[in-house]
Amino acid sequence: MSLKGRVFDLASNEAIPFANVVVYGDDSGGERRMRREGFRLENVPPGLVRLEVSSIGYQTLVTCRVSV
Image (cartoon, rainbow, N blue to C red):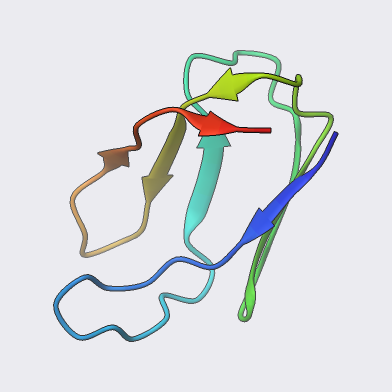
């Protein structure tokens, strides 16, 4: 399965280009593509997953569970 989306700054609501998004706790390195307009994760296991989001200048965030 794949998962795509965009990352935004909570205070300014501005998009954060090239933010790093990975499935939390997944050591496989999975396929991911970060772009100016968003991200796309490939080969995400179906079910509930947590995402880890990081970018220079921001605190790393681990999301609540996301349904894939």
